Length: 334
Length: 290
Image (tube, rainbow over all chains, first blue to last red; front, side, top):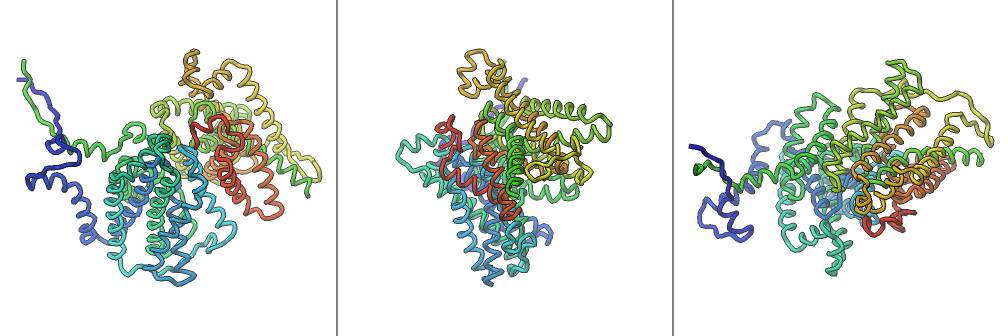
């Protein structure tokens, strides 16, 4: 008796994309499971982890935030190669507030988040009229040049940086602040992209001229997307300033630009959850590979190339598709 | 001092033009933004260095060989990676950037940094021009820069391949109907761009030393020049090279060497704010930029 494998969509998925008739706990779990699982993992895991892995978890959250901020821009058709700009701007604003004005973290971080985001938006405002790789080029250049400017003018501690920031009360506070914001941003942005507002943003990516034709000011929407994205990045930076108790030129380093892109590409762009998944995979991986030092960045580079060429949809799309499918063996009629 | 500054500004401009022209050529023809450009520049320098010091080849042989190898690796990069993501600007950028990153960080990991990693100058003699000592190397940069620009102009206007390049640049589909193989032209364009990067490395590196950071620097400078001049326009590259070259040298002399980077950044933001397509980027203004 010969058999073949049959692949069918699961019931709920087949019926509708977004209108559900939930009849049983099983169906509810089927839908809520993938959403509850990461949330529960992020909230419960810190309680069981050692100090070292708690620190790793903080970097997972920070890079996931940066990756999502990249993904949001990418969904609006702006490919940034300089997430370090957002990160560094938030880090410096928070550092300056804390160092020169003695603002406690609970005041410095929120102010730095908004102010840093606004400053980044302001810097990139002239560039918003560009699209595609033109935007990428400028975003790549700006953070690297800001480093030179800080080095040259010796403002804000120059090459030494500012140290001795007020730390957050405890490691658990740090983790729950980071993961809380991460979950909020993840589910908030995913919901935002489902609304009409998100539709306009995606429309700008797909065909900005037809969006213009619809009487929508795309530059205004792009500015808003840029502000949301840079605010998320700036929060990550401001937060890390108080975790490291230091802010200096490394905050504009290429790592903060590359790893988020790698995470978003590995996890799969356009879903936001993929960006988080990528960070969850790549950051611990890079910790495990700490022994090989500089070769890590070489690996990220190769990861980027392999994924973009061979698996452009990323891991999340694949997992999502498989989750909605059932496979079974059926007999073949001879 | 003023005359000397002008002489050095002129040389600086040619250095910038040499750095940017390969990137610009590739982008102008095939629309591929080769973010591995800086890595190819450094890679060719390391190749020359290896052949000179480990294989003990004469300078000219190692220079020619490394330029050849860099061209081949550019072509291979296009054939095996870029061809699969052709037309998707985002993927092209990320793929080339990933390749460049891998190459540069590999060299950094290998620890090939230091003053002994440099290429020899052509000659140690120097001249007195307008009250400033200028060595042969810098004069060679100006001469080779001029020759390359002239050569490129002749190549793109009077040879079959060059005309095919311009055809692809103007309208790919129409060019296809004339029997021009666009993949082949794009392969060649990436390869030629890599070759120009290698030539630039061969004559510019002797002024300093080979370092992975230099790779990022070259990429940034090339991008800056191309953005200011208008991508894909050779005239724009030359004019932007002169503007930035003179501006950098004059800030260096009269304000302070730390401020040179700020001048480029300010120039980019200013040009983008006033004329987003760059000074001479008229060609594809409507389609690609705004």
